[in-house]
Amino acid sequence: MAATTTMTAEGIFSALLEPSGQADPYPLYAQLHGLGEVIPVAPGAVLVVGYDAISSVLRAPVSRVQGADWLDVTSPGWREHPSLSMESILNLNPPEHGPIRSLISRTFTARRIAALQPAIERMTNDLLDGMARRGAGGRAVEFMHDFAFLLPVTVICELIGIPEADRESFRPVARDLAATLELGMDEDAIARADAA
Image (tube, rainbow, N blue to C red; front, side, top):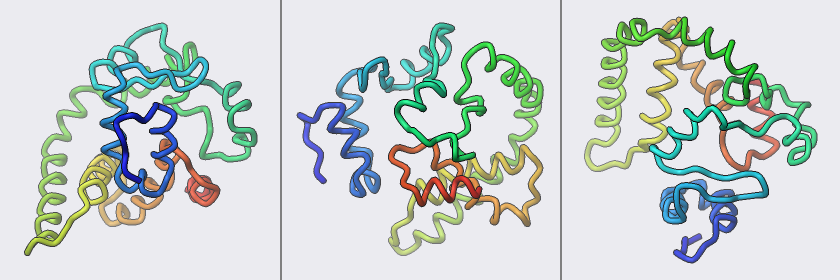
Protein backbone atom coordinates (compact mmCIF):
# COMPACT_ATOMS: atom_id res chain seq x y z
CA MET A 1 0.00 0.00 0.00
CA ALA A 2 1.51 3.31 -0.99
CA ALA A 3 1.38 5.88 1.78
CA THR A 4 0.05 9.32 1.03
CA THR A 5 0.79 12.58 2.80
CA THR A 6 -2.88 13.10 3.62
CA MET A 7 -3.32 10.07 5.88
CA THR A 8 -4.64 10.60 9.38
CA ALA A 9 -3.03 8.97 12.42
CA GLU A 10 -5.79 6.36 12.35
CA GLY A 11 -5.14 5.68 8.67
CA ILE A 12 -1.44 5.30 9.29
CA PHE A 13 -2.07 2.85 12.14
CA SER A 14 -4.39 0.86 9.90
CA ALA A 15 -1.73 0.80 7.20
CA LEU A 16 0.89 -0.35 9.73
CA LEU A 17 -1.28 -3.40 10.46
CA GLU A 18 -1.39 -4.40 6.81
CA PRO A 19 1.24 -6.86 5.50
CA SER A 20 2.71 -4.17 3.24
CA GLY A 21 2.92 -1.73 6.13
CA GLN A 22 4.64 -4.30 8.31
CA ALA A 23 7.07 -5.18 5.53
CA ASP A 24 8.09 -1.53 5.03
CA PRO A 25 6.84 0.65 7.88
CA TYR A 26 9.38 3.45 7.46
CA PRO A 27 7.38 5.71 5.09
CA LEU A 28 4.45 5.39 7.51
CA TYR A 29 6.69 6.21 10.48
CA ALA A 30 7.86 9.30 8.60
CA GLN A 31 4.24 10.35 8.14
CA LEU A 32 3.62 9.93 11.85
CA HIS A 33 6.58 12.20 12.53
CA GLY A 34 5.05 14.70 10.15
CA LEU A 35 1.91 14.87 12.30
CA GLY A 36 3.88 16.26 15.26
CA GLU A 37 5.50 14.98 18.41
CA VAL A 38 2.27 14.16 20.26
CA ILE A 39 -0.51 12.57 18.22
CA PRO A 40 -3.94 11.76 19.69
CA VAL A 41 -4.80 8.19 18.66
CA ALA A 42 -7.79 7.33 20.86
CA PRO A 43 -9.70 8.86 23.75
CA GLY A 44 -7.17 9.21 26.57
CA ALA A 45 -4.28 7.86 24.47
CA VAL A 46 -1.56 9.63 22.52
CA LEU A 47 1.42 8.50 20.48
CA VAL A 48 4.67 10.32 21.15
CA VAL A 49 7.28 10.30 18.37
CA GLY A 50 10.84 11.56 18.21
CA TYR A 51 13.69 10.84 20.61
CA ASP A 52 13.54 14.10 22.58
CA ALA A 53 9.78 13.98 23.04
CA ILE A 54 9.84 10.32 24.09
CA SER A 55 12.71 10.97 26.50
CA SER A 56 10.74 13.80 28.09
CA VAL A 57 7.66 11.63 28.52
CA LEU A 58 9.63 8.74 29.99
CA ARG A 59 11.27 11.06 32.52
CA ALA A 60 8.10 12.93 33.50
CA PRO A 61 6.76 11.69 36.85
CA VAL A 62 3.17 12.28 35.72
CA SER A 63 3.44 9.90 32.74
CA ARG A 64 1.59 6.61 33.03
CA VAL A 65 1.10 3.54 30.86
CA GLN A 66 -2.32 2.10 30.22
CA GLY A 67 -2.98 -0.58 32.81
CA ALA A 68 -4.86 -3.84 33.09
CA ASP A 69 -8.24 -2.08 33.36
CA TRP A 70 -7.68 -0.48 29.96
CA LEU A 71 -6.72 -3.83 28.43
CA ASP A 72 -9.84 -5.42 29.90
CA VAL A 73 -11.87 -2.96 27.81
CA THR A 74 -9.74 -2.89 24.63
CA SER A 75 -8.53 -6.51 24.52
CA PRO A 76 -10.90 -8.83 26.37
CA GLY A 77 -9.28 -12.19 27.01
CA TRP A 78 -5.74 -10.84 27.30
CA ARG A 79 -5.40 -12.30 30.81
CA GLU A 80 -5.50 -15.81 29.30
CA HIS A 81 -2.11 -15.20 27.67
CA PRO A 82 1.00 -15.25 29.88
CA SER A 83 2.95 -13.33 27.24
CA LEU A 84 0.64 -10.36 27.68
CA SER A 85 1.35 -10.08 31.40
CA MET A 86 1.14 -6.63 32.91
CA GLU A 87 3.94 -7.50 35.37
CA SER A 88 6.69 -6.35 33.01
CA ILE A 89 8.48 -3.15 34.01
CA LEU A 90 7.29 -1.75 30.67
CA ASN A 91 3.70 -2.01 31.88
CA LEU A 92 4.00 -0.90 35.49
CA ASN A 93 3.09 2.47 36.96
CA PRO A 94 4.13 3.77 40.37
CA PRO A 95 4.27 2.49 43.02
CA GLU A 96 4.87 -0.99 41.48
CA HIS A 97 7.41 0.36 38.97
CA GLY A 98 9.87 1.72 41.55
CA PRO A 99 10.95 -1.49 43.31
CA ILE A 100 11.47 -3.32 40.00
CA ARG A 101 13.48 -0.44 38.58
CA SER A 102 15.57 -0.36 41.76
CA LEU A 103 16.39 -4.07 41.40
CA ILE A 104 17.37 -3.60 37.77
CA SER A 105 19.50 -0.52 38.42
CA ARG A 106 21.42 -2.35 41.19
CA THR A 107 22.20 -5.19 38.78
CA PHE A 108 22.92 -3.21 35.61
CA THR A 109 25.29 -0.63 37.03
CA ALA A 110 27.35 1.72 34.88
CA ARG A 111 30.43 -0.32 35.85
CA ARG A 112 28.78 -3.59 34.72
CA ILE A 113 27.71 -2.08 31.43
CA ALA A 114 31.18 -0.53 30.85
CA ALA A 115 32.76 -3.94 31.49
CA LEU A 116 30.66 -5.32 28.66
CA GLN A 117 32.04 -2.84 26.12
CA PRO A 118 34.69 -5.20 24.67
CA ALA A 119 32.15 -8.02 24.32
CA ILE A 120 29.60 -5.67 22.71
CA GLU A 121 32.23 -4.36 20.29
CA ARG A 122 33.14 -7.97 19.37
CA MET A 123 29.45 -8.87 18.88
CA THR A 124 28.91 -5.77 16.75
CA ASN A 125 31.93 -6.55 14.58
CA ASP A 126 30.88 -10.20 14.20
CA LEU A 127 27.37 -9.21 13.10
CA LEU A 128 28.66 -6.58 10.67
CA ASP A 129 31.19 -9.05 9.24
CA GLY A 130 28.40 -11.59 8.77
CA MET A 131 26.28 -9.01 6.95
CA ALA A 132 29.25 -8.12 4.74
CA ARG A 133 29.76 -11.79 3.84
CA ARG A 134 26.06 -12.29 3.06
CA GLY A 135 25.97 -9.04 1.09
CA ALA A 136 29.08 -9.79 -0.95
CA GLY A 137 28.57 -9.34 -4.65
CA GLY A 138 25.62 -7.01 -4.15
CA ARG A 139 23.23 -9.49 -2.51
CA ALA A 140 20.63 -7.86 -0.28
CA VAL A 141 20.91 -8.16 3.48
CA GLU A 142 18.18 -7.48 6.01
CA PHE A 143 19.53 -4.93 8.50
CA MET A 144 16.67 -5.25 10.98
CA HIS A 145 16.90 -9.05 11.12
CA ASP A 146 20.66 -9.47 10.73
CA PHE A 147 21.78 -6.64 13.00
CA ALA A 148 19.20 -4.47 14.74
CA PHE A 149 17.46 -7.45 16.36
CA LEU A 150 20.47 -9.71 16.85
CA LEU A 151 22.71 -7.19 18.58
CA PRO A 152 20.45 -6.39 21.56
CA VAL A 153 19.40 -10.04 21.92
CA THR A 154 23.05 -11.12 21.91
CA VAL A 155 23.91 -8.44 24.48
CA ILE A 156 21.01 -9.64 26.65
CA CYS A 157 22.37 -13.19 26.38
CA GLU A 158 25.74 -11.89 27.57
CA LEU A 159 24.12 -9.93 30.42
CA ILE A 160 22.14 -12.85 31.78
CA GLY A 161 24.85 -15.43 31.20
CA ILE A 162 23.46 -17.54 28.37
CA PRO A 163 26.41 -19.54 26.98
CA GLU A 164 27.34 -18.86 23.35
CA ALA A 165 26.41 -22.44 22.43
CA ASP A 166 22.80 -21.81 23.57
CA ARG A 167 22.29 -18.37 22.05
CA GLU A 168 21.11 -19.57 18.66
CA SER A 169 18.20 -21.41 20.31
CA PHE A 170 17.45 -18.41 22.56
CA ARG A 171 17.02 -15.96 19.67
CA PRO A 172 13.76 -17.36 18.24
CA VAL A 173 12.30 -17.47 21.74
CA ALA A 174 13.28 -13.83 22.27
CA ARG A 175 11.84 -12.89 18.85
CA ASP A 176 8.53 -14.59 19.62
CA LEU A 177 8.25 -12.91 23.01
CA ALA A 178 9.31 -9.50 21.67
CA ALA A 179 6.42 -9.68 19.20
CA THR A 180 4.16 -8.67 22.10
CA LEU A 181 5.59 -5.17 21.69
CA GLU A 182 4.45 -4.94 18.06
CA LEU A 183 1.20 -3.68 16.60
CA GLY A 184 -1.45 -6.09 15.40
CA MET A 185 -0.38 -9.44 16.80
CA ASP A 186 -2.51 -12.25 15.42
CA GLU A 187 -3.54 -15.37 17.33
CA ASP A 188 -0.61 -17.40 15.97
CA ALA A 189 1.88 -14.77 17.13
CA ILE A 190 0.26 -14.65 20.57
CA ALA A 191 0.42 -18.46 20.82
CA ARG A 192 4.14 -18.42 19.93
CA ALA A 193 4.74 -15.63 22.49
CA ASP A 194 2.86 -17.59 25.15
CA ALA A 195 5.02 -20.65 24.45
CA ALA A 196 8.17 -18.51 24.59
